[in-house]
Image 1 (cartoon, rainbow, N blue to C red):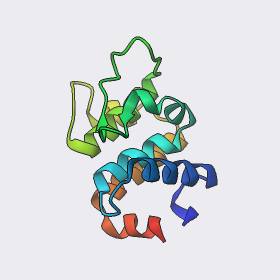
Image 2 (image 1 turned 180 degrees about the vertical axis):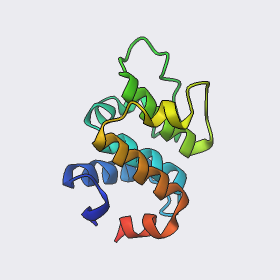
Image 3 (image 1 turned 30 degrees about the vertical axis):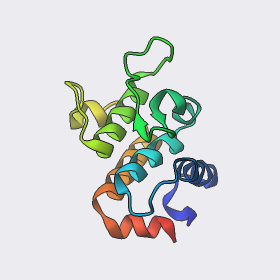
Image 4 (image 1 turned 120 degrees about the vertical axis):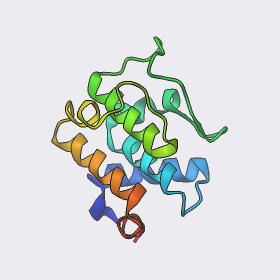
Length: 127
């Protein structure tokens, strides 16, 4: 199962989010968001500002002054929200989302897109 995750910690954090949310195994929209959140330590630490597992909903966090997001973290959040429910703003463009990411975060973004749109990749994640 670990092969499509960045590392074992990423996989464990992803599974924690899935279990906490009681996510349905075929929910690729939520899976792509959780994949992004769990694959970046800063996002995972700030997950309560991003997603509410009790309401099963994303939070308006990008303009929240209680949490500090770098430009690359904001790009990952925007991508996750877009993959989750189509959310977008004026910064949700391929150049803005991918242009500021380092190699690890770009891999995280690429794999999250695959989870959302390639069922064979997603089901391979679960093996």
